[in-house]
Image 1: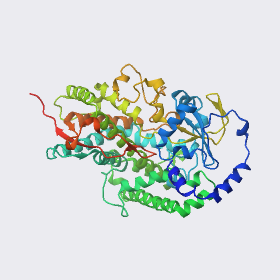
Image 2: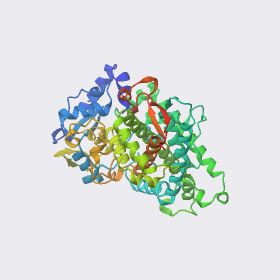
Image 3: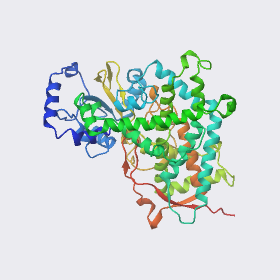
Image 4: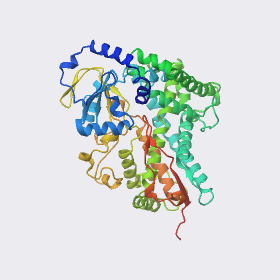
Length: 511
């Protein structure tokens, strides 16, 4: 959705272009004119409803529009129709009842190029190839064969963070955004690529900088919403050149990862030492793979790209939001630390199995995801066939945005204290991500749900448990905890606008 900023700075000044598009749109008639369409806020010629999102966070602006026009709205971003879903009931119709009608993805130029012409899992259209890629992704990265190694790596990397924080001079302020980003990169890179995250630049840019630019390119362009002339403006604005450079850097990094693995023969690596990339290489060998699972080089690269773009930021921002909310709510922090410390005691480390005895921790993570879903607008879907949603007609090629942020803040579901961070609201609420409850959908649902939601939630829980078990936390410079800035930043993945800087104090155990 970064298209909005680009569009309004380049497109609006050109009356001539507006005029041409107006003529094109007027000459384009469709059956939508006589259909029972969802409510539509007032739109302008050519740009549609884009002006109503200007200067605002899109998920918040769409939520405000839904308060007036209802939980199912039809908006136009340029020439493309979108339905906006802002209630759990409508979300359930989209992602469960009519999941097969809405399980594909729309075309975007950035995603096409960065996924090697739609060979990945997250952004590719729904087809047989996507089904096979998802099976490979789940079985080789998230399945039982990798679970033990994943748990070991996660616990080891977290122990490293604890040691690092413990050794700091008293009163040192820590940028938790950077600290937790390095942690998650370490876990992901070790599990997927067999080596720790390295901060040294690649082609003059760090991996984080490459991925940050990739996120911007995945956000869309003018050409995605305005045919022909939008692509011309993409070229002259420099967006197309940025996309080519971004792809070159990302592809170069992925190729480096592949080359490092290909340079080691199978005889030098035991089966237990093989990581995700080794598994992909095995599946690229006709001797070791079945015909259905044979992977091309671009297949492998697309799956590695998914790991890099989808397995880092979403986990990091959830950890940071959780620590932010806990830090500014002393009651919650005290209650959570009491649960963790009474259950762990003087054990030298916290293990994954210990989390089963921490129900309040799980409530804290759920409440964090309710208020701060990492992707407030789930990745767009596209309607495949005529169907009815909420009593309204939805046409093929209509795109769908599910406002996970708005659904998690619906007072009809969560009560009048919907904006309050109150983990206890989950005490008597049976809630399982990926289940049949659509009152909050931070990981999506149905065929296009995030396949890594379980491991992501476990990583967040284990990290928060360690941070609050071993340390007491204060804000620097004499600030008050409740004064922490909680302003949002970003569009595809929404983080804090300002880094979370806190002061860890080694916990003193009572004799």
